[in-house]
Every structure is written in C-alpha cells, then in structure tokens.
Amino acid sequence: MDGFADAMGRAAAAAIDFRAGVGERAVGVPVEALPGFDGPLPRAGTPPGEVVDELVAAAGPGLVATVGPRYFGFVTGGALSAATAADVLAAAWDQNAFTAVLSPAAAAAEATAARWLLELLGLPATASVGFVTGGQAANTVGLATGRHQVLAAAGWDVEEDGLAGAPPVRIVVGEERHATIDRAARLLGLGRSALVPVATRPDGSLDVTQLRAAIQGPAIVCLQAGNVNTGACDDLAAATAIAREHGAWVHVDGAFGLWAAAAPERAHLVAGRELADSWACDGHKWLNVPYDSGFAICAHPALHAAALGYTASYLPGAGSPALGGLTPESSRRARGFAVWAALRELGADGVAELVERCCALARRFAQRLAAGGAEIGAPVVLNQVLVAFGGDDRTDAVIEAVQGEGTCWAGGTTWRGRRYMRISVSNATTGEADVDRSVAAILRVASGQESP
View 1: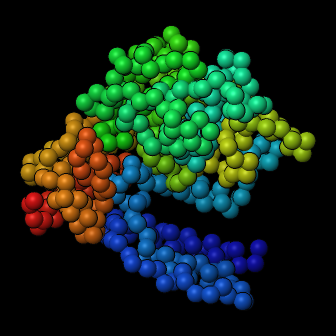
View 2 (view 1 turned 60 degrees about the vertical axis):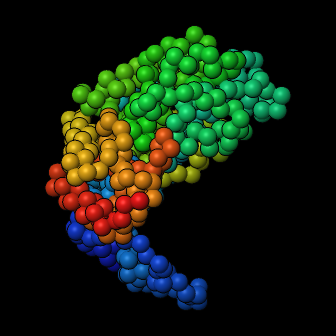
C-alpha cells in the first residue's frame, strides 16, 4: 500500500519515543490551545508519512501521560506492551468482530480471552462475554438483558412491543452507585424515575438490611463491586439472596472492583459474585488494556443474545450468542486481540500481583499523606484514596495546583458532602518510588496553599 510502511514506521518510532519518556514528562499540565490541529481543510492531499509527523507535532503538547506511572485520575490503567502492540495490529488488520464469518481470528481470540476472563474473575464458565467499549456499555447491556427477562417473566415482550403499556420496572440501586447506571436507565427508556435508591453504609457499600423493602414487581437489583470513591464492595452474596426471593435480576457493576476476584487476598471482597445474572467490568482499568475495552458478561447467554442480537439475511451467524450478538454495535474493532495479549503477557499470577501491588501502593499513599498532615477520608479498601487538606476550598486549590505542577495527576470528588482529592492507583508501571515522589509533590504543593 502506497506510503503505508513509511507512515507505520514513523508512527512506531513516535510511539516508542513517547513511551520511553512518559515517566519523566509532566503528567497533565493544562494547555490553552493546540494550534497544530487548526487551519482550513487542505485542497490537496499529503503523503501519509508527513501526516503522521504533523499529527505527532500537533498532539504532543496536549498529550496527558495517562499511560505513565504517576497518573492517578479516573481509575485509569495504563497500556501493557503486548496489549498495545496487539491494538496496533488490530487497527492494521482492520477486522470487523461482528461474526466469525467476518473474522475467524477475531472470533477465536475473543472466545479464548472470554474463557480466561471468566476463570480469572471466578464467574460461571458458561457465561457469555460481550466485548464492549467500557463500563457504560457493559452496564447498559446488563440492564437491557435484565429488562428483557423481568418483563418476559411478567408476560411482556419488550423487544416486540416496546415499553408503552409495559409493567413498570424498578431498578434498585445503592445511593452511591456509579452515574453510568442512571444513564443506562435513560438510554433504555426506563428513566431515572425507575431508580429506587437504597441507603449505603459508612464505607459507601449498600445497606443490605434496607434492600428487601425496595424490591417490588419486575425489578433489577444493581450491586457494586468497587465504590468509585472508597473502593468498598457490596455484600454480593447477601444481596443476591434477597433479590432471588423476589425474582429480581441481579446486575453487578464491577468496572474495576471485580478484578479483586483475581487476587487471592482480595477475592473475599467480592464473595458471592458468581451468583449474579450479569456483570460489567473494564479492561482499560485494572487489566491495563488500551482504551476502549470493557466486558458485558451474562450468566444466561440465550437471554443475552435475545436482548441484544438481531438477524439479517446477509449476515450469516449474526443471531448466534457470540460476538456482535452480545454487544450494541454491529461494526466494531476486534478488541479481543488486545485482551488476549494482555492476559498472555501477565498470566493469572501477574494479574493477581498487579491488583495486590496497586492496593499496597494505595495504602502507602494514604499512610504517607496522613503522616504529612493530610486527612484520609475513608479506609483504603482497594486502590482508591480520598484525601482532604482542610476545608473544601483549600482541597480544591491543592488539587488544581497539583495538576498544574505536573509531577502527578489526581482528580477531585465529592463524598458525604465534602471535597476530596481522589487518588486511583491502577497502572501496571507504578512503583513505590512513583508514590513517594507524588506524595512529596502533593505535600509540597499543599504547604504553599493558604488555609481557609
């Protein structure tokens, strides 16, 4: 292909150069504008290699070092070497992973990666796995499948007749659920009014004693593995047992917390996970697969396919419970290649070590920041650390100053009515030296901020 080898060579060289220096660059210094992307639409074309060089130059000042060892925002993992290379190959191979007819290789990679994932996460080996973009899509798929089942049990065919006139579906959720659950309710036509919030315990996990009274009629119970602020996990076993008494569908939002199942010392936090009906999990968080990578998992493959799949005369195999029949997309990239590569690179022991190490580093963050005078807002359960520096205004000022200083990057959050810096340790390359360097920078910046 004309110019392909030159363009790929330049892109590979730029990628290698970026990754080689990412550990020392400013992590996320704010940028006002990126003029390199501006200008009129050109009339004439440009050789591919030159386009790559222009792209690298234009993007460079605005690249955030999310793949580096001191990015602690938004529970963002890095990107493992083999997974990154596999993702590049996926783009070059340009496979549509909708059916095995379109790409036998994509189908085989996803089948094996799915089997490995279920084993790692301690979920039923017979479950179906849809390779989606992330937690939002995975939660939406789980709720869509739950909507299908609970309405079918009530004698209503939602795929045929829609929601007009259907029995109302209640979505029972914890007060501290992730916002993607609310969005999924909107996207599925159930609406936010269908959400029935249940009180949470001091650590942010659902108060199971309040659950039974909230389940009425056709219902989906959404549980959480990994509170987005504290990392706390719901009592999955007890909550699922109660939901079963009422015939409710049980969905677990385990975007990052479900990975605790892969680490023997953390697996107790998600005990009972295998009892649920559907699960959402992210690859681009703790597994350190490049964006976008998530998993919509269902214990009932036929229901999964019934809620998501479709058939067409020109799409052989489209209706089978695999690949595109388990996701909202028809045309999608072959995400399974990068997931397969990540699991091959790490192995089961490597995934367990990664999870345990991130948890230990989060505790190190909390201990050293507390020793420096900061307030830790909640016990460290997994990889999340909440930090305050006095009043809300001062905490926000410290967060902004830390982001501008560039040694590390952490975001802000509101929990129980107070502002905190939220530190999420999810990157496979982060080590103790990165934590210590970041703590020193945070405390140094905090010391320069005025007290309220």
